[in-house]
Length: 442
Image (cartoon, rainbow, N blue to C red):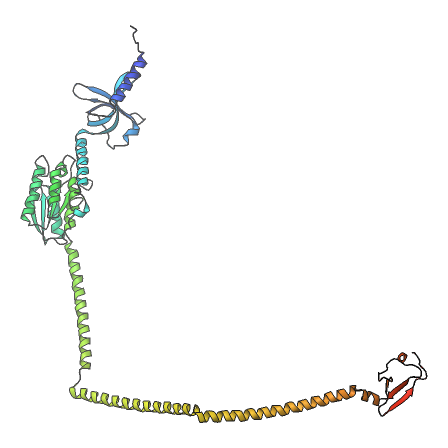
């Protein structure tokens, strides 16, 4: 049988791979020992308890997640991966997260409860009850020996001394505190003596404030019919009670200030309202006086009222008479206009108009005919003169003659004549019969 022989590097490499795959993310609690912080920013230390120790490395790129400063002797809770440092074969824990052991557990519990109650709706704003602006009685649920109570009482005495205060003393720290707070919230609601409740205590560590991070306390606050103002710890402290309360104040003093309107400011407000009321009353009185004066002016004696009515009747009578006269005049004018229209449109008038038009047309036609006859006569005379000028007789008067053959044809060419032929010569006065004795051609 062939034996498998590992080199040291092969063995350490294989062990490292198995360790890293088998212990990828584990939580380990222990005490820091041998802490080294070189210039690289990495931290090297050992986690130990009574009889065991494991080397650990906390690299700089992981340290940005938390702001805590590790120290020797500090009990911490770390999350990381088991690995093997091959050059020396040392088993080591590569840390990815670190927190103090006790507070870390409380912080995880806080976050888990916060998420569960938030999903259930206990923190929703629609469940928040309104606070009374001027509470008559303020209930305080806190320790009767704590500084928080004195801070609240001092603030109320300075700002709002008119309010009554009821103390519901409870434990605010320790294992019995959650039950005491829950029961006192129930008692305060059963008694129903207070208009609003302050749940308060001074500052402290997360462990000191644990009673205000319990589910029972959160549900008791949510179930309270009386509005609850939380004033737990300092401004940086935040608890489950703060989230479920109707109002979260940064400190007990701040809670008292939220519920206590300043008596000085209230006096100013009262003076302002008094001034405004007086101003409004004076203005209303002035308006009433003006209205009275107006009504007085309008108020008249019955005899005076009767005289006014008579004058009005007389005026209306005159107005009616004027309107009747005006209407009669209008009717007369319209009647005359109708008469004129009828007269103009009567058959006799129409016939007379037609006769007048006919006579006028006759006169116009006679004038036109005379003028046209004269124009025709003058034109005929001019035409006659033109005919006379162009007539053969007029030509003969100027010494010309008309030569005709024996057949009566007018001769215009000497070649048409024959020697010995008889011709007729017509003159302006008379005719001559002649015989052709000679013909000359030009």
